[in-house]
Length: 241
Image (cartoon, rainbow, N blue to C red; front, side, top):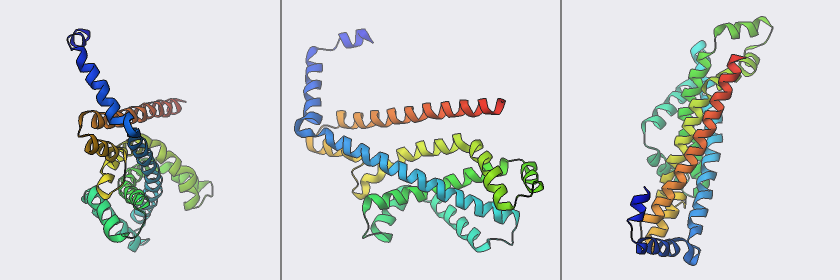
């Protein structure tokens, strides 16, 4: 590696430095990246919250109906349709329908948060449902033997164990969600990717802006993956106690 860099002429690094200045420092163009980063993080965080809430509700409806087919028939059909449509269509198409049709007069950034949250909820729902099903039936029967009703048993015994079982899978879904938000620029939102593309269109240089955007996404994913690894280790340690 040192030999490779040593073989490069000094003019290469000089030109690269000048290009970096022109792309990011001149006229504070780096702010396109900073603002885009902020919007990307905001969209992801809000979408994560929506996804967890919506996914949990859908999973509970599906499980309740599965255990007792007479309950929540209409809601279960609505949830089934929701899962089929969202999981069967591209996230970008969903985003464009939400922004340009359903909420055409709404704030684009807020609509994007809702759209990505609805998309995430469909995948989180199936993950949580599998987590609930993985909880031993004996745990539910033990709760009922203690005099707990179905709702209390679910909230105090089943859901905590289910979330523990599926935490790594849910975390991976949110890492994927972070990367999926890169399509937000198609509806006029200045996200991280759009910020880099704006600089590219101004300076006519695609190399540095797009590579910087890729590097920022990579760092974010590495940080989240590191957090996931630590979470998994803690969960395994708690299982051994």
